[in-house]
Image (tube, rainbow, N blue to C red; front, side):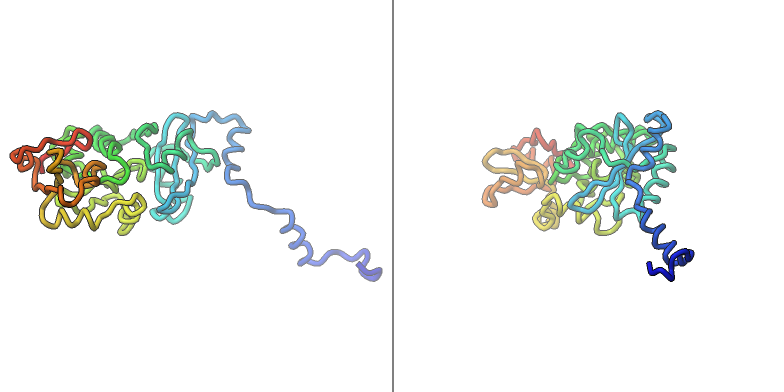
Length: 269
C-alpha cells in the first residue's frame, strides 16, 4: 500500500475477496459431527455414504445394525432428493457420513451382499420374502419370476414384480438379476437402461441367454452329467456347445432322464 493509501477504508471488492478467502466447503460429514458433538444418540438417525460402482454412484443408508436403503445416483437428482426419499419411506433422517457400515464396501465391490444385514422393515411379509429370495441369486446369474415365487413361498408372480418395483435397497438386493419367465428382464425398479448396465457390469451375456429363450428354451442340460440348470448358472456356462441340451420346461427335462441342478434349483415354467 502506498503512503497516499494509508488510512483509507478498504474497498468493497477487497472486503468480499478477504471474506471469500476465509470460507471453505464444509466436510461431507459436518452434520454427523454436529450431532455427535451435542450428544444425539446414534440410534435416532441413519447415516449414508456414496460408494462408487461400475454402474456409477450408489447412495447407501444404514443404521448401526443394518443397511436401511440404497439408491443409484442415476435414480435421484441430488443428495437432498435421496435424503427426502429415505425420510418419506422410513421416517428416519439420513445424515451424510464418510465411513460405511462394516462389510458394506466389500459387499458392493464383490457384488456379494448375501451376508450383509439389510433392514426391509416397512414392507409387507410377501415383499420381504420375495426380496430375500432375490438376495440369494448369485452375481452374474439370472432367475425367472417363477423361481423367485417358489423360493419365496408364494403363488402369484405378480406379487414378485410388485416387490421388485418397490425394492428399497437396489443393487444390494439385486433385482436386476430377475427375468420374466420368457427370459425378458424384469427391471421393475429401474429406469430404462439401468438394469442393462448392471447386468453388463456383472458380465451377464444377454445375447447368449437370448439365443436360448428365443426358441422357448428356459433350461439347459448337459448330456454328459444328465443335469439341467438355468442357462446362466455357473455349471451351465461350463457346458460345451456339443454337449448342450436345451429344454422348454423342467417336466421335459425330467422325462428325458435329466435331474435338476442342486445349486440353481430350476423349477418348471
